[in-house]
Image (cartoon, rainbow, N blue to C red; front, side, top):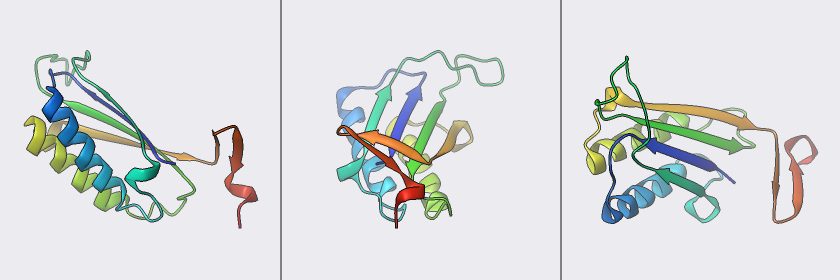
Length: 120
């Protein structure tokens, strides 16, 4: 299961949120074996984000935690699609969109513990 946390420092309307959710759901499908059906997504607006000391510059931070993708397959494509989504939906300059990837080796969901070292 991929887990995305999106933080922006501008207000986001309900319509923009739904569109961003849809586009990020499509973007995660660019990572092999991942899809919107397994995506857990948190969208936060009006966060305090200071870019180069300036809190008034529209900016986005996206943290992507992905289980069982040690080769980072699809990360290039995901990065491009996610950056485009922030530009198209929220008007955030691609230079102000930052992504952080976290490789998850163990995960707990639905009462189950999953460890990639135990998977075939």
